[in-house]
Length: 131
Image 1 (tube, rainbow, N blue to C red):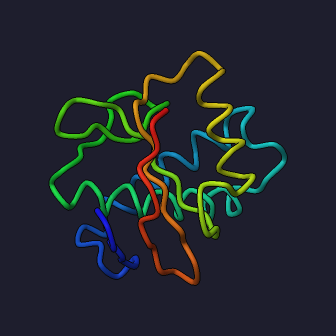
Image 2 (image 1 turned 120 degrees about the horizontal axis):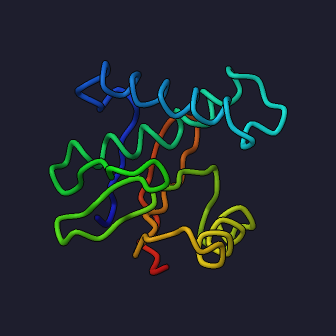
């Protein structure tokens, strides 16, 4: 995983990517999670994470999780959250807030978080974090 870098153009199955973005964006827009955001704002945020998820699926080392509250499943059967932010490391407040929420809200079954920096469309793997 070290030095893993990619962009949206590296995604092979663009149709699958767009389907996954739309499914998640519509689900979030229809829920209380929308927090007043427009569907287009939600699509933009969802796209950033889905690109990383689909890239990982295309490596053959992950599959889509069957439940809506989790992202992927690794080859050992562990659920894995995938996060992509314009950050430099896992000490960023957005990452720490997500980790706290995931660890304390009781719904999470993920064992790891795969953290990516997403800067100007370029994704760089930063860290695999134990949850």
